[in-house]
Length: 369
Image 1 (cartoon, rainbow, N blue to C red):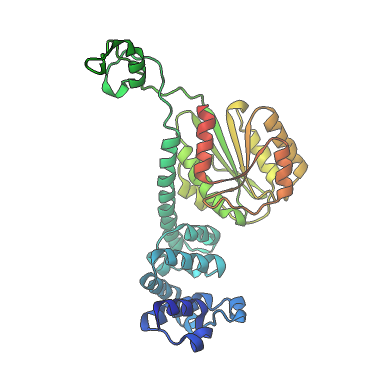
Image 2: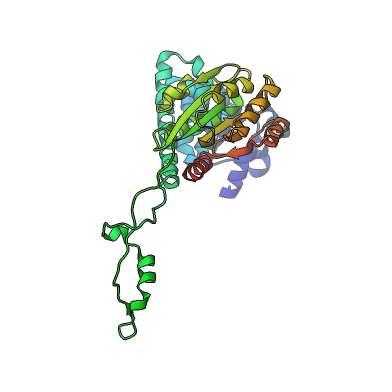
C-alpha cells in the first residue's frame, strides 16, 4: 500500500480496509493507537469513518501515551492528548501518577489538570503541580518577551551633555551642520555634535485590574489572565490586581506573583455572578483615569444584569478605561452572550476578545500615552 493510501486508511479506520487493503506494521500500530481514542466516538462509528477495534479495551493510558510518542510527530501527539482529555474526558491522563511522570507538559494538559485537580490525592497533585509549573514557565517566558518590547519606552529627545556613541543623535547633527558641507571632500564637517538623553519617559502609576470569570468554559482565559497578571506585576508604574469569580468573588492579588499557586487555587465551574465581581473590583480603583479595568467573561450573567450595567456605567463615566473581553487566550475566538455584551458596549465598554500579547500592547500604549 502506498503512503498516501495508508494515510487515508488511518483516517477512515477499519471500514476502509476492504477497499484500500491492509496496513504495514508501523501503520497498523498507528491505527491501533488511533482506534484506542477515536474508536469510542459513536457518531464517527455510525458514519462508518472509524470502527473501534480492540485497542480501547487492551491499552492502559500510560501504554497508549508511550505508543503515540513513539509513532507520531509532536504536533500530532499534542492533538491526540488534547482530544483525550477534552473531547473524551479520559481523566486518567492527568490523574494517574504513572501517566503524569511520562507526559509532555502542554496547554491542553494544563487545562485538564485545572478541571480535575479536585479529584487528585496529594501525591498526584504534587506531580500535577510540576506540570502546571512547566507550562506556566513557558507561557511566562513568551509573554515576558512581548512585555519587554511593549514597555521598552521611547527615548527622550532632550539634548544631553553626556557625549558617548550610544547617545549620538545622527539626524539632528547632520541637519544642524549642513552649512559646513565641503564640496571638495564631499562630506559634512561636523562642528557641533548632538547627543540625546537615554532616560525613559516617566510613567505615571497605573492600575491594571483583571476580573476573570472562572466558569468551566473560561479555563483558557483563567490561565492566561493569571500569567498576564504575573508578568505585569512589578513593572515600573503598574500595579496589577487579579480577581476571579463564579457566584463568589476571590481576590487573588496577593498571589499574583506566583501564577502556579494562583492557578492551583482556582475552582472552575459553578454559577456566574458578574455583577457582584464587578462591584467588588470597582472598589479597588484608586485613580479612575489611570486605571485599566479588564472584565474577562462570556457575559452569561447569572446575577443581576441591571446592577452590572449600572456599575460599568459608573466606571466609564468616572474616566476608567473598561475592557469587556469575551476571551483572553491564544485563540481569542469566544462563545458569549452577544446581547449583554452589546449592552455593555453601548455604555462605552470596549468589548471584544484579545490574546495576552494584544492586551499587553494595549496596556503599554495606554500607560505610555
